[in-house]
Image 1 (tube, rainbow, N blue to C red):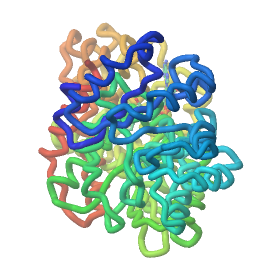
Image 2: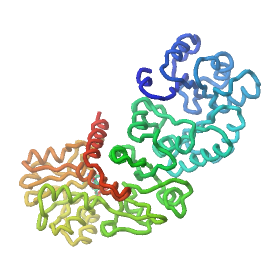
Image 3: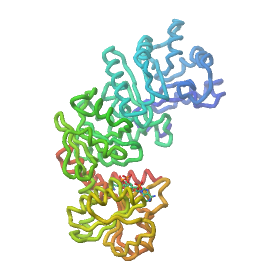
Image 4: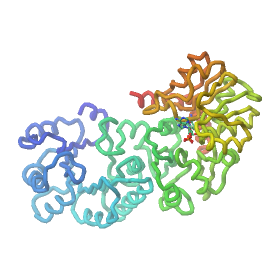
Length: 489
Ligand code: NDP
């Protein structure tokens, strides 16, 4: 309650989260509602719609009929079946206080339009549809619903639950939603994919988003761990650019590009300007584009898409971003001996940029057969990672995910004894800031370089491609460091 007082918002109080006997005597609840610093919405969610208690339909109906509707809340959220029944009874319901709602925690149901019609047949002040988005493209149906309600002259809240539905929470109000939902803090998120009010207001600046706002975002799966929204949105805010950067959790890349991205085929009216592309879509995305830059073609991966009139252009900003921090540290790299551990997309981008610098690269991989293809492409040597020693190299790069926060955090592709004699250890993992690989390198007496400069360099290039402006790198770095420290608490 104290936290809620800091924000200009309505507060939803979930009666189904209270202890079972709390509704026997409503005096404390009345006092709580009266003391609430903000106007409230009360709801008594059915278990079938995600409620946290097992009160059956009859119990909930009796509660609303007897006392619930008299509670001093600004709005009451009634499920569709309860609202329909109360409407049939023609009792004294103040419908100007009612939100009539439908929730589905599994999917966007095929009968969404019929459900909307039933909701719209009630005299409720506002309608609410909260359905599970399992793929970002599911958001289309939710945005459609907002349009449908607008045409019908009805207020509606339409939300895609789950990580794939985050766009509907951020863009909903700009598409005419009556309101959007956020949790008071991350750890207290009440619905899957719900973001905190702090994120919604200070990172996504939801109050400033309108139909004129330029849309950018991150396409991948998963995307929830990414700090790119913090980095790009901070850069937009500091340059006073009317743009927002949104995470899109995408399974079916082809459908997403066809229905939501490509200007010639998309089914949504929005000012989409560009996208970052991350795992697992960096290669698959090539087939969706009209033009691809040389680095992306050579690397075989695109991490940046720019919408140019009715065309989609693909770039690889990882390649340049890999090399810039390295050259800043070591100067010219011609003839530098560089060991790349790993043979995936980041290794490929690194090899392309090392080639352009005339450095001498060697790949180290656990699966020589797979890595050989990459080595052949760049005409370089490929060695077994197990038992490798790196003393002959100027630079040793970790281009594997080993060391990434979470399950892999304590792992490293090389120990101190293997790294001894190498000049610099370059870690591409950026979260955490100091990985086990970097600790081993320090113990071996190597210089170290972390993955954050690469991340920030590629983000700055994306920002420039989308806006034509130079990114404020200090702002991006501050936002990234803050996001990393928040993600590690
Ligand atoms: P990919 O999945 O394309 O490639 C990962 C590579 O690591 C594969 O060659 C894989 O081998 C290898 N690997 C995975 N696990 C192990 C292991 N236990 N032992 C040895 N090798 C292993 O990922 P990316 O190349 O896209 O990314 C690699 C890392 O670089 C990630 O952590 C990513 O976050 C980071 N990165 C950082 C960027 C930045 O801006 N700082 C930009 C891009 C990436 P196999 O093929 O045998 O599975």
